[in-house]
Image 1 (cartoon, rainbow, N blue to C red):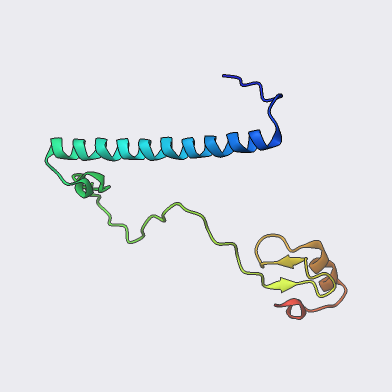
Image 2 (spheres, rainbow, N blue to C red):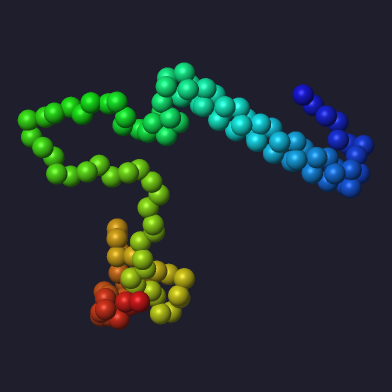
Amino acid sequence: MTINLDDYSVADLEKLIRQAERKLEKKRMEAVKNAQAEINKIAKDLGVSVDDLLEENKGRKKKTTARKSTTRKKKAGVRKPAKIKYRNPKDSSQTWTGRGKRPVWLREAVEQGAKLEDFEV
């Protein structure tokens, strides 16, 4: 679907954008309501609550293994960035967390006799 927008003024285009955003929000809300109704219907048909239906491990049997593991799997997610441990006093935008390869500015300073502790934050 293509709409020729060449003849519209700036005000008309802004009005069109606002109308489209409102319509988009209405459509999204309708989709959410429809999904909720469908979930409620499925739960009712199965004779369970919605919470039971959405519960992840409900009804799954755990597999037994010969050796029990004491470690848990980590949940996938976004990790926080590491804290800055070292900063270049000549250029405060140059930092290092202490992880990975040592940056050139720090490596050169240490080679010239500076101590790593001099750059700690």
